[in-house]
Image (tube, rainbow, N blue to C red; front, side, top):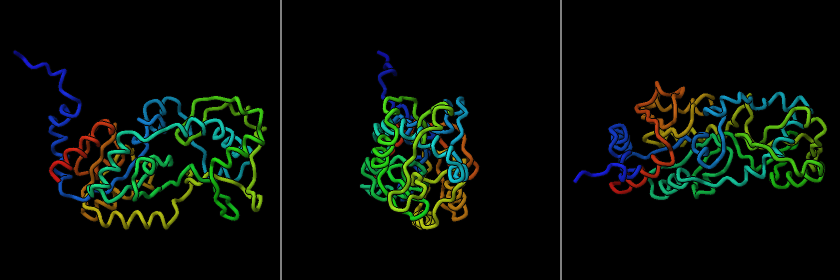
Length: 291
């Protein structure tokens, strides 16, 4: 009687692949540092800027200088953010986030450097997380540096723009939504409650530098790692790519797991294309079994 291969689980099919076995051999017995990108959160329903669907829409994120200089740009950003925020909050950690948290708890990884701003790693239970690009949960005043909750700002935005309460739209990678430019010009943006300065989400916009203490903390984590595991990042922006280059310079092996090519592939000891929600939980099981 022949065995029906359709009954083989996805994890077991993955384990049969040579590239996965090579990955497992490379990682076993080594302390990993994870560098995560938007691909970690797409299975939670949060889109990314460089995935196939995002490329089709050709949507450009707001630039830092544009936000600072233009009141109209700020109104457009905050209107989109106001509409997209409720749906962004609905996103929950997925199997990748939970598996990484379990890896940390079992000592398989030392921590996570993330380019994501959704705090899903924290929600999943990860403790040692460095947020390269900040977090959308916080809002900061550009003048006095006062920080307050994004939830508080949402309430103030609603009070200032009651006519917007019924707006719905498809939300974007940074927690905002797609809106026609003409509709946002009259949107009212609250000022800082302390100094009346400009309020900005506490995230790194395109064209803005990652804070030096965050970069230094990330380098310190890399120095203690045996291998750098890049997950779901195209490494297009320098903020993450620099650590791949740095790992190579320090003779620290780099493993890249991503759907599609990345800027760092030429620096990697191994690249593999698999769905993160499958490969990371499988790695956790296999590394733990023979750790």
